[in-house]
Length: 79
View 1 (spheres, rainbow, N blue to C red):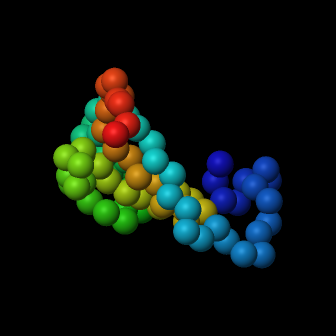
View 2 (cartoon, one colour):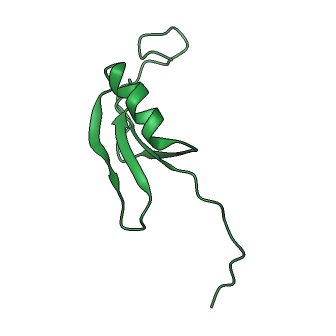
């Protein structure tokens, strides 16, 4: 929703310290699409410390959204 939509409650204190992580199949394509739509960019498309491509944007209410490559979870056995 847009922050001014009637379904969005009035907030005295805006959300702080929240980052949503959204996995996508083609992060470059999503970045290009959102860039052309004028996204409110926090961090350019790049590679994180784990080798995944990602970028970070603000949603209309100011929450950070980390859009990253979807990674298949392989068999993992904790040590």
